[in-house]
Length: 270
Image (tube, rainbow, N blue to C red; front, side):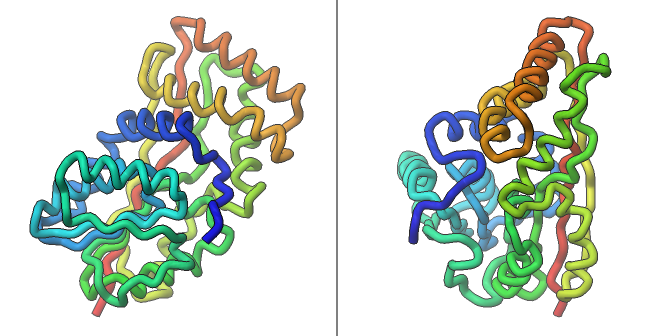
């Protein structure tokens, strides 16, 4: 297959941003996995696994008797993940170089399918979902962490950065994605025989020295020019937003609020 055209890039800079992002959001992801009661011996599929940070978390929970499959269309990320699993001497990890739409996945096989920050980029998310449901064992759980892209803001308000939510949503839309995709998922679950068992929104906030502010900083400064190139904003507006962002970063009394991230999980009936 050809190298995927990732909106956010496939390179070492993006890998390091993803590593930091994983650490910042680890309490949210770990809390979700706790509520899903991931068990020793489970067979898990990590969809859009990237460098494999969630796959590591899943392997630690399922143990030696379980199995984790990292499904990832980027050879760069998959090679990095494979090296990390070898370093840990883990043999019960599988690697599949493909998208969810292309992969030949076993039917009714996985106890857990986990998808984080992927489906919002997909042009046909319902088709993407139904492909995965077909590989879910009866009684198995399919779980998503993704955006309902509201809530992103800085305080004090009134500057150019107030336009950032609109620009970020347009950035997703530039590849046919849906930044509100989690709002559509309960209805899709019902339609395709999956019982909704979790729908939990999260928003994190902090001051200029907080990890959430640093996470936002790395995203905006890395991807602002790409937002211009994709037509989500103009060069003039982008420069004004970055100027306002840096002004808030230098204000010890400023606050930063993340967009809403939603945990959505369903259990396959029958």
